[in-house]
Length: 288
Ligand SMILES: [Zn+2]
Image (cartoon, rainbow, N blue to C red; front, side, top):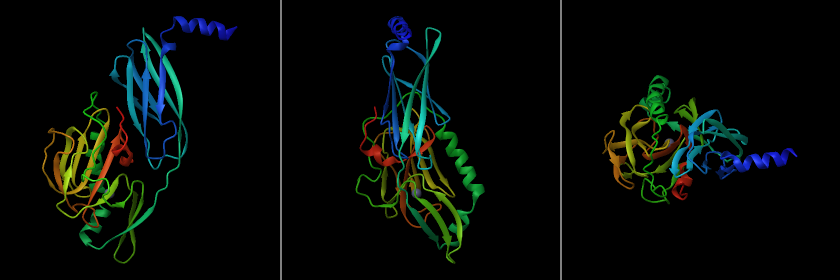
């Protein structure tokens, strides 16, 4: 009886026509998830609540609202409720789903810092905090529109570039005597690159950060819109300026070993709504 009443109500309710799609519903730790809300009319304030963060769903096409959500290596594997809410005709509606986060494999790297100055940098938490403050404010400022066109390009122009330290690796920094001086996890991927290797924009976007930092070294962040930003660290020479628009594959810098680096390489990362995700799948997966 109740079921029948609900079915009749559904026939007259716009909200019943909305569908929520989560892909993939079972990402690996560090992978990203696409959330699509399809409705039969315009809705307001569509947003997703996921692992204590609220992310807006952006208008993608008529009556279709979309957001990419990130997960990270340090989120425990398990079930994560995902709640989407939106308003229609003055009423608030809710749709629920579950994301089953699968455990990834992350290695432990031991890095020995032979240079005294760099070793100082490894424990310069005041500088690190200051840099993280600047970057964090950028990672939390999300543009409604997106510049993203197709898959992301490899910043070194080749997908076969050797990975010297993968995403999610636990990094233990030791000094020459073997004493551990600090430890933190790797939020991006390091690619082998001799000093002076051209670095290209992975995707269209606006330069949000272009500055030299003590720990992160020469740093560029490109804002691709809708909470998605690519990060390039330890650069030697920066060729772009803040607020400049760049297209995918544009030359933006030359790689180096500036900041806390044990040798020349490119650190490349991706922030998705302020979560540092594994950037690897973005070279092959088209999201929009
Ligand atoms: Zn790195």
